[in-house]
Amino acid sequence: MAVRGRWNAVSGLAALLCLAPVAAAAAEIEACTISAWSTDPDPNGLNVRAAPTADAPVIGNLPAAREVGGERFATEVSITGSHDGWLRISEGWVLDYIFDEPIDFVFRGEGWVSGRHIGLRLNHRHLHAGPSNDDAVVATLIGSLDRGRYGPDSILVERIHACRGDWVEVEGVLTIDGVSTGPRLRGWTAGTCSNQVTTCP
Image 1: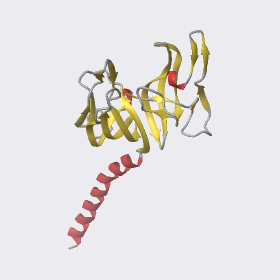
Image 2: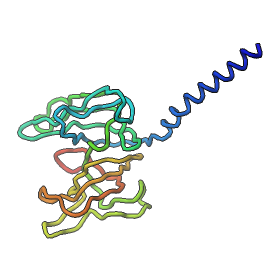
Image 3: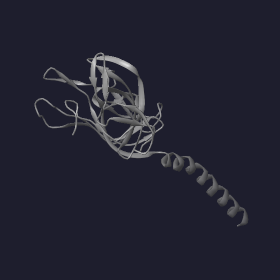
């Protein structure tokens, strides 16, 4: 009985050690609630994976942008968390902004996509060093250059690094009349918009 008890204890310890990395990974996921869209230029679409790693199994796909009425609209996503540059999504859909057709859901469940291929619009005038208005301002997104005036929606977001609550850490460049101007910007903002045809209020 003593030997069996010792083996049970060892087995129990092994089980706890196996669970520890899973619990640690779960604790590192930052929860958030934002919407965005796929920017992946791959005509085969953007893979949705089972975990926030490039070698995790593919469990879904966000189709490439579709042409509707002469315009191209990307697949949109609902983002619920982030970890190490990956974004956890709960839904993916294609919205017809031209003919008001029913929403076409292309993914439902829990999956992960790379933040390198997710974009959105910005609304707030500042980027901060962290996810709070109390954090230092790292960039002001309203001003003017030789090419004209610009605002937050002039920032072409090329990557989302992380999110927390309704805050998101973005990276992008100032673009005026389709031309990239100035240095690459990176920072946190709570003012985002996933509408592909206009800025949000």
